[in-house]
Each structure stands twice: as structure tokens, then as C-alpha cells.
Length: 235
Image 1 (cartoon, rainbow, N blue to C red):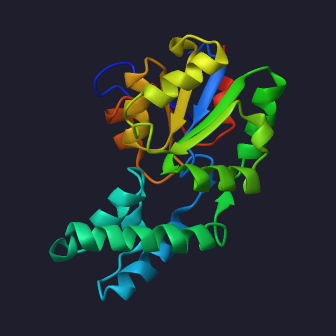
Image 2: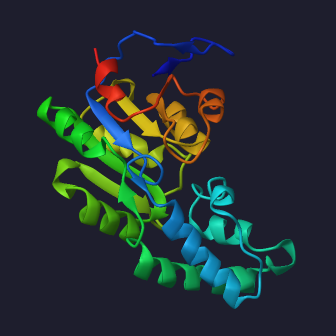
């Protein structure tokens, strides 16, 4: 059931307030698709080559979201975080994950139905990720219908990473909509801060990698527990 934040500390279950939106920007990892285990498995193989200890799947929930380079740096033990080691492991991670990004990754239940319903209602859609651009596009093409999205964008050298709102604002402009008419749906504090910075409607996805509390504390207007709940919020 959705929870609505109406001020500091307010978390009201079963909120019925409707939100006026005509566009939705989705985060990818933890929002549209569950990529956790493929990312963690690839990173584990990279760490093993360095003789470094691995991490649990749950630990990776808090390492994912800031881009692969940051994931590599944070996954390495402090004594191995020199620039040469990070650069080497980053290249290995990109190569390994690129080959194994669709082994365990799956679309979350309800996502295909949500996308179809929004498109049928004329809502404009986009995907915005801190994952490398080529990987983002490959995953969307493999597991979803890329033609449903006005734009699909991952991390590129010429664009800042989230929570910088530049890419989200460019997507809103492509929609031809003011930011206030666009939902930013994601599962992490990075996504909520991106949506807030862009002047959009940040909505949290509790089925992803982070907690409901984190989403509300980082600016979520609403936290939903299933993708299809978004349809009931549209006024």
C-alpha cells in the first residue's frame, strides 16, 4: 500500500491524494529490473582476482546506484583503493558484467503491465540510470520494449551522474512537459534527490534495493509497494 509523506516524519498509509503527471522517468536497477545478483556476482569475480574479500548480496544493495566506478571503489578494501587498482578493476568489472548482465536479471512483476497501461493512457516514459549507457540500453532492449520510451540514458562522459538533475531535465524537455508534471520513480536516495532537484514528483519504489524509510527521508512524495500502484495515484 502506498505511503504519502506530508511533512517531516509524516507517513500516512493508504493515501488517496492524486498526483497530476503526464510523464514518468524510471530508474533502472531496483525499479524496472532486479539486477542485484548479476552485478554482485560480477564484482565478486573481480574482487577474487585481486585476492580481496567479497560481500553479501544484501551489502550490494547499498553499493549500487552511484555508478560502476564508485561501486568498484567502495567494494575494494581500503588498502586497495589506489587509483591504479580502481582503474584496473573498473575495466574488468565493465568487461565481466557486460558479458553476464542478463544471467539472473529479471523484470519486476507488474512492470510490463505498468508500462503498457501508462503508454495506453498517453503518458510519456523514459529510463535514466547511473549504469553505463551501453549496458542500460542493452538491458532495456533485452527485457523491455525500448520503443515504449522516449529516451533511455545511462552514464556517459558528457553528462553528470545522478543526483545531478541535468539529464532528467533534458528528458522532461523532450517530453515537452514542465518538470512538475513528471514523476521520477526510483528505489534509492539518489533517485529521490534527483527528482527533487529537478522539481519533479519523486516517488519511491519499495520493492527495490533500499528501504522505505530511506526513500521518505530523502524526499519521496509517495512510496509504493507494487508498480501498478502508480496507476492509482494519477489524477
